[in-house]
Length: 306
Image (cartoon, rainbow, N blue to C red; front, side):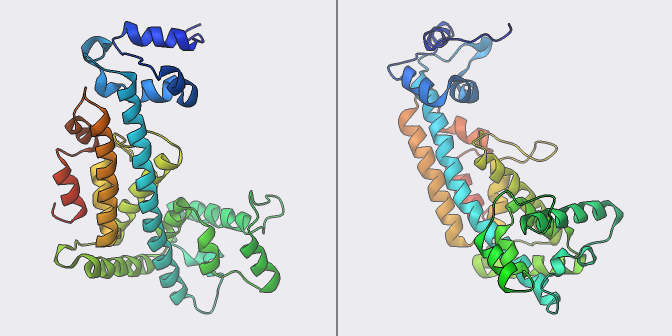
């Protein structure tokens, strides 16, 4: 057997053999969190050449980095919810303003782009929405929602502004991506106007393609947060080149100045937590994994100065 079961005592012995001090809290950490998520997930910064830990490294330090990352996920998740809300709001308004005579135009393939490569994806998206609305007798929705049931029983249609609330960020991203060019252009223009209103002279140019890329990254990092995966060193997109630093630039494009300031404060608190508990590695080691050289760069990225 390649990886046989090991007791807590055996796991502690493995740590000692590799130069990691298990400390007094090892049993509690292993019981509550597990060996693989903590040690295997966060040991890399504490490892020297030859798979040995740095002199003085402790399990408590590795666990502190684990907890810092968990707190970072919580901070980011809250602010991604704000980014999700504005995408849904603007998409809904711009789409509905163009389909005022049909509250369910979002269920019509003719409302979306007609390029060959998008047709099947559009149909699949509409089918999934119909399942969510409880309109597919062969595929009942996973979770019934009272407000959708109310509209089905009391009204002859379910408007997009009701349905949009039930869409995931991934579905809202697909909705935006599948819209015709004119509607996507109007949405990106409104984002550009809001960005100027929020950031003034530090505003950047927003196009429908740059907005698509920003939300593509945001949804991927949202999934990392939702699935409790490593965040601070994560890289997304096909080339695995989009890191936390790039994400902050994407968040700057869609959040207000106050929201960006709140996001920075949350990140700083997470870094403070780690700094107070970890001596073997420095804050700069953590920041480099995030794509930054210093906290100043984090603040600058969320303040439009880079």
